[in-house]
Length: 317
View 1: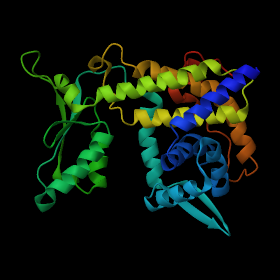
View 2 (view 1 turned 45 degrees about the vertical axis):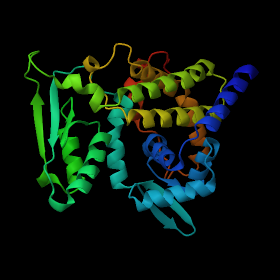
View 3 (view 1 turned 90 degrees about the vertical axis):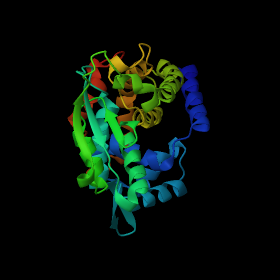
View 4 (view 1 turned 180 degrees about the horizontal axis):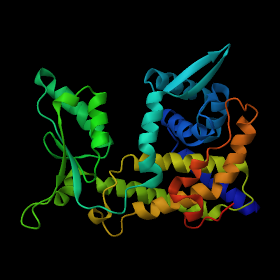
């Protein structure tokens, strides 16, 4: 047992030294994954205790939540000298919007349908507006197939309209459903994958995830301490979230046969559920004395990553 504990501690320490999480995005990760299922609210003092073992000090945390409130990701309530934080309505909406990409991945079935966004010129503000829309659409998974034309290989009209509505451009762009009609007689959009999406970069990140967290999964056992389980869950999930939100999650037909995203998702799900119960013990001990704000875990959590009982390598509790 001692050797295993020592090995896990070494891996956690090395990970924090070589790839420390960024405080601001870590806050969003923890609020969405760990706090929202328990009611969504947390005192600043407790949030500081949650991020401390993850390599974030109090000063960085305070600066981060201040900026997240200013950017409308978080909202705060003053209770005397104490501050209570939760995701804002916008932060909750964005978190829920991303949850499918994070926990479920893309559908295994694709029938060749595409969503296209066509952007005409916007008058004098053309260049700045185009740049802003481009960033938002690429973040949503779209690829630029030509100047002012973006494509995503599935029905994502809702996501496209959300981006355009957020930027107040709903009346200045075309959102179209499309299906390739060349039937092998001309250029196919699928042939543009390498120039529309940086799959090599994403593949490298997935491979890094496998190299980092594969050995960590091998070292996890039933004697692991709750604090270790929480740290592993938080660090692995935070890194997973960072990678997957840069992945357009193209259909399997458009990906290489040895695409590392598939085993990386299996690994993340297996590690997530392997440490989940002990990580929840840590959260309960730290936050459970405040039942008004820290509530019983919502049951839909157990559907994440295909469900606890369906995740390879994980046994039911």
